[in-house]
Picture (cartoon, rainbow, N blue to C red):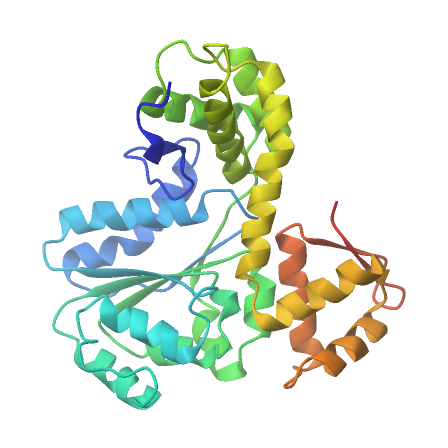
Length: 334
C-alpha cells in the first residue's frame, strides 16, 4: 500500500507546491538579486503552524541552488538550536568551517568572526522558529554580513519584533514580510492527493475519505499528512485493502496527539516549566503562573519574555488564553 514512505513525512519537500502561488512568487522576487550576484533583503515568513512556511522556503532555495552554481545554503531550526553558540555552529557547518571548533571551549566571538570570513560564496540561511533564539541580537550580527541572506520563519511577527532591541528593529522593519493563512479544506485535499499519488498504490483511498481527513485537520497540512500516514499504516495492518473513513476517524486523535507530543518535547526549559504548571492547575491566572514559574526555575526571565513564551504555546495549540489582560486565564488546549 505504501510505495514511498518519505512523501508521508512532514519534512518531505515536493518538486511542486500546491495553492501557494502568491507566496512563492513573492519570495522568489525577494531572492532574485542572488541570481545576479547580490545579497537579497531579509524575508520574514509568518503565520500559524502547518501552513507551508518551511516547505516554501526550502522549495525556493533548492530552486535557487539549481540556478546559481556557487551558492551555500543552510537550514537551522532555532527551536532545537536556540543558543547563540548552537546557531552559529550550524551556520558554520553549512560552509564546512567546524572542524576544529570545540563546543566547550571555543568562544562565540571566534565563531562569529569565522562566519564573517567565509565570504567567498553567497550564503542563504533559513532560520526556522527564529523567535525561539535566546539571543535575538545574533540576527543583527548576521544582517551585517554582506554575503549572507536571511530567510526568517516565525509564527507571530509581533512576538519576534518585541523580543529584539531598537537597533535590530530598525534594520528588520523593512524586511519583506510574507503572511501565510491556514489552508482551506479544498487546498488540503489537493496536497493530500499529491502525497497519495507519490507515496501510495493506486485506488487506495476515495475522494470522500480525503475530504474527511482535510475536515479533521483544521487547516493544518502537518495534521492532514499525519492522519494520512497513520491511516495508511493502519490499513496496511488490517484486513481491508484500502483506507476507509472508519480508519481515518480512529487514527485522527492519535495523529494529533503525536504532533502535540513532538511539540511539547521540543519546548525550551522555560516553556516546559510554564506548560507543566498550566497542566497541573488546569487553569491559572498570569500573576500566579509567573510566581510559580520563578519558584521552579533558577534563572527566571522577565514577565515580558514569559508572555512571549506563552504566546508561543498558544500558537502551537498547547494552551488557550481567555479574557483580557486584567482578567486573563491560561488553560491547556484539549
